[in-house]
Image (tube, rainbow, N blue to C red):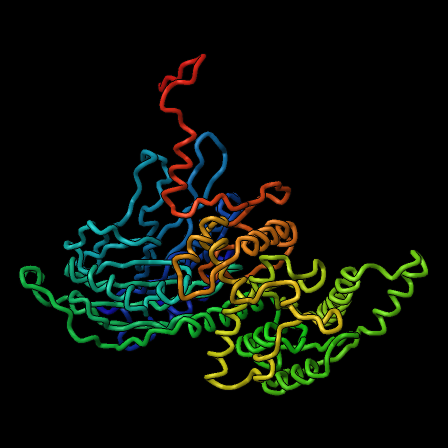
Length: 583
C-alpha cells in the first residue's frame, strides 16, 4: 500500500483556505504517475488547532459542516483528514465542536465516528480508535491521542496516529530517542506498521512541531518528515509478508531506512521560535515587524530570530537613545543590525524627556520621582515604536524575557507593550544559552553584547543587579516556584539537596516570591508569548491579582514534615461538644 503523509500547517479557523490548500496537495499527488492509495493529514488539518471559544460558536459549527461536505466531494484520492464536527449540547439549542476524522473516497465519505452526534453513549464511553477497511487491509485510526500500554492492535495492518502534538522541549519530538523507542515498542509489540501524522505550525502561544514518522512492523524507521516545517512524504507499506508468520516469530528491530538526527535543546527551541514568529506575523496579515534595539542581549536575540523568520528586509530595528544610553550600547546595536542586514532608524528621546520634565515641573513644582522618570523613558520609547508601527503597518515585537516578566522588572505601557513577545517564555539564562548556540552556527550577535552587564540604562550607571539577584540565582528560584509550583520551604529544601550549587538564603527566596506576587497585575497586560512547554505565567499560574497571600519559612524541611503538618488538622477523636459522622 502506497501512502502519502501530509504534514500541514493550517490557520486556525480559516476552514475554506485550509481546505483549498489540502485539496491542492491531493491534486498534485493524484497527478503523479503512481498516485498514493491513501493520503493522511494530521488532526485539525482542516480547522487548525487551539480553537478555544470558537468550539462553542454555532456559526463556526455550520462552517465546519459546509467545508467538510465540500471537501469530501472534491478530494480526488482516498483521504483521512482531521477536522471538527459539531455535537448537540444536551438541554440546549446549541452545539460544541469536537475533534473528528473525515474519510473520503471517490466523492463519498463522512465522519469516522469519534464524535457521538446522537449523544447515545454514556458519559464514560468514547471511541479511542476506529478501524477502517481499505482494499482488504485493516487500518486503525487514533485521533489526537497516544495508545494505552495494553491496547491491542495486532489485528491491524497499519496503526495511524493523527496528532496535533505541542512542542514541549526536545524530549517531546519524534526525533528524540525516547519517543522513537516508544514508537518502536508499539509497532513491534503489535507487529503492525505505525504511521504518525503530526500537525506543524504555530497558533498564538502554542507551537506544533511536526516530525511525522513511519515505522514498519519490526519497529524500524522507514521515513520521517522535517520538524517545524511543512512536508509531504510518500511511503510504500509492504504488507505482503505473511502476518501469521511474523506474529509467531520473535521480533527484533531491523536497520532503519532513515537515520534521524535528534535536535539539540537550544537548536529545537530556535526552530520553534522561528516558526512561531513567522506564523504569528503572516497569519495575522502582516509582512514586516519593528522592534527597539537597545544594544542588550534580549533585543539582539529577538532581532536575530525575526530576521531568520521573515527575512532581514522585513525587520526594522529602531535605536532610541536616551539621556543615560551609553555609546557602547549604540555601537553594539549598530553592529548587530549590520550583521543581520536589517534596516535601522534612530530617534533620540533625550529632548522629549527634558520637555516633559520641564512641563511637569511647571505644573506640579517638581520633576517627578526617580521611578516615574525611569518609566517615562520606557514609555516615550514605546510611543515612538507604536507610532512607527501604526504609520507603516508593521507589527511591534516585544523583547521582554520570562525572568523580568515574572518579577515585574518592566514598565507597563513601556517595554511591556507589543503585539507578540517571542522570548517572553524564556528565562534570562536560557537567553544566553540560545545566543551561544546561534553564534556557534554563525557569529551574528556581537560578543560585546553577550558579555556586558545587563542594564535598562534608565539612570546613570544603572545595572539589573542593583534591583535583582544574579540571573543564575533568580532563575533557579523562579523555575522552582513557577515551573514546579514550590513555596519557600520546598525551594530551600531542594537547594539543600544540591550541594554543588550555592545555598539559597531564606530572605532572598521570600523577596523574589514577593516580587512575583506583586507583579501579577502587570503580567496580565503583557503580550502573548510562545510557551515551548513552560508554564504560562497568566493562564496556568493564574493567581488572583488582588491577593493578600504572602509565603514565609515554616521550617518544614523534608516533604514528610508537610504531611505531618497536614495530618495535625484532623483530630484523632471527636472534639468535645459535637460529633463528626461520615455519610
